Image 1 (tube, helix red, strand yellow):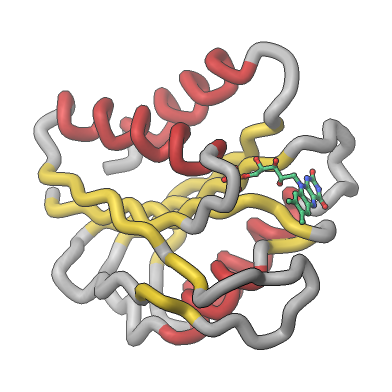
Image 2 (tube, protein in one colour):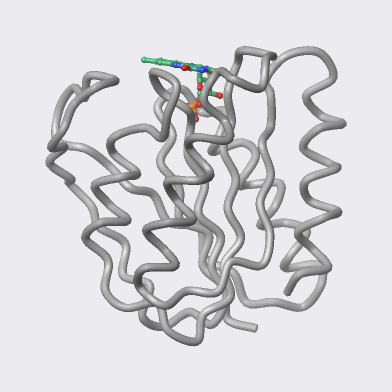
Length: 154
Ligand SMILES: Cc1cc2nc3c(=O)[nH]c(=O)nc-3n(C[C@H](O)[C@H](O)[C@H](O)COP(=O)(O)O)c2cc1C
């Protein structure tokens, strides 16, 4: 399958996760591109409108994985702005992940995933999986679990 992993990452955790995921999906025989959402300048955690420097084009992919950090108990505003701007997602299988640092489940992970889901579904995308990687403790194991879960979805 032709797959795109499209992420926003401010301090590399989401990027590192996506690189490992990409490697695994290529091993499974998929054609995979990793694309970055980039902002123009600083982007405060509760910003309403974030100007984007790069807006990856997803039209050529059959499968998509969107990844983002949690910021201020919800989805990072850069990812919200990106998802709001992309065109129709009809007929695309989509998996979602977020990375975060706080361990409790009321600290934004579910909120962020919920937001991504809502936007993607409003554009006709079919959400086939999601995961939250909490960046503390045995992070490698958490990434491996996510990759194992995602690699059977596509
Ligand atoms: C401005 C800011 C706000 C954050 N807010 C939260 C939060 O509400 N909940 C949480 O669990 N982690 C929060 N974090 C931690 C990040 O989600 C976590 O470090 C994430 O893995 C960073 O991903 P990145 O390295 O791809 O940018 C926040 C980090 C930053 C910089």
